[in-house]
Length: 111
Image (cartoon, rainbow, N blue to C red; front, side):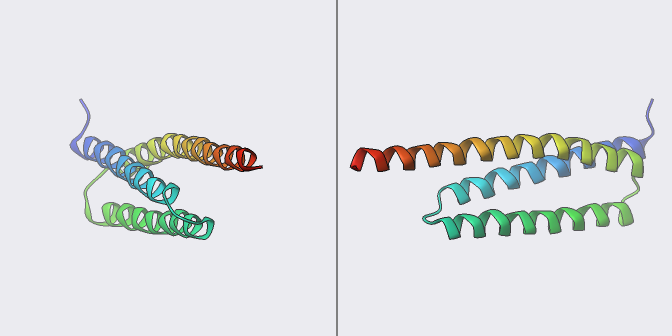
């Protein structure tokens, strides 16, 4: 049976990574519904900066103040983080490609 610090580390790592993924999803939804390219970039990159800073803060606070197994925490956080990051990039690429296709298609209809 696993020790409590290991279970806490695994749980917190997965939980924080999933919280980051949820924040990414919300940020990208807001960015994709923006009215201009500059607003899209500001929301997308501003959200990325805010999410990364907050995630780094939470990881640091967890490692300093919570009795967790560091290896289990960092391993589970980054394992889930990398998987959700790949999904985020694929989703954003697909969504922006659809927006570009729609814009190009609408431009051709007007000509």
